[in-house]
Length: 361
Ligand SMILES: Nc1ncnc2c1ncn2[C@@H]1O[C@H](COP(=O)(O)OP(=O)(O)OP(=O)(O)O)[C@@H](O)[C@H]1O
Ligand SMILES: [Mg+2]
Image 1 (cartoon, rainbow, N blue to C red):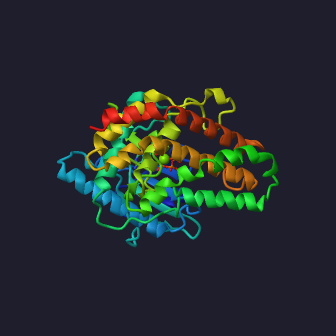
Image 2 (cartoon, rainbow, N blue to C red; image 1 turned 120 degrees about the vertical axis):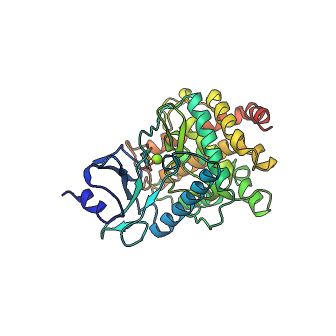
Image 3 (cartoon, helix red, strand yellow; image 1 turned 45 degrees about the vertical axis):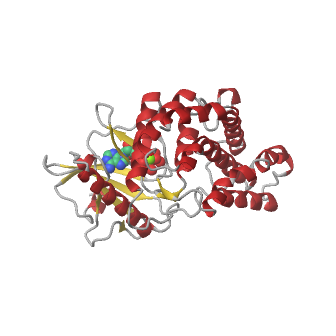
């Protein structure tokens, strides 16, 4: 029996395992589809948790259990059918824990969602559905009674990301600061504006809610007819400002170019995708959002793009220690591409706000 088949024995699964096969090419976790022979028994998804990124696995798994149980309750209240395909379901280990540690790696098991499809390429229709799904996800979690913890501390905290940037300049460990003054200036000139969300939070003007924090289209599962089944990839679900979740979808989904595009002319915000996502998102989220949170949504797109600019550039100044690079100046190229997207988002700010006005009521 191979390693993964051995591992599955440690969980409270039903049925006879007939195969364990790698599933997709996850960037963060390694996933395996576990098939059982009986037609009336479920199949499972076995995942190796990336504990270098998620250091407290117990806290991580507790978060996911609370979140999925709460969503399940909402689905039951709504009278939904086929609930096992509309939320993730954790299968505990035989000792009752929500994970299994093999001495080296941490593993978890979910029910496998049959015939779920995820998409890497975006269309306006998918953006609309994803917006609805992430808005609904946030609305369901708006009244979760359990405390949800930060699985990556300060993940979307702009003040913290700027501190890391300033440390990188002070240390100048790769000797790159001297040639980088123009970009440093671009970043510094926006720092005050970009930390406003943190200040507004401290002043009690905007609340922290439960965010997904990895709002990409491939983290939404669709059924065969193209209807949303559920939101997956719950590792980064944590408290935050909703503008972050909105902004990260636009940053990753509404870019006409690549995140690291060498040709900056390719990079701009796709207003069709933006409009579709905003329409879908506000359809499910406007009922619980405060007016100020709605007004800040276009800013969220700029904020998350700026945050990623700062993170890529910080890594460049540090000598490429965090992000995998494929050529020597990769982090610089990524920085420039994000900065280009940011300036386009700035140019279209009024237009983006008009779209929000249209869908806010
Ligand atoms: N319970 C499930 N049942 C069926 N398919 C699933 C399930 N959970 C995840 N998937 C599929 O596997 C893919 C990878 O899962 P997940 O997003 O959790 O891993 P990841 O390593 O974080 O991936 P990535 O880095 O690409 O976001 C998802 O995009 C989805 O298509
Ligand atoms: Mg994923």
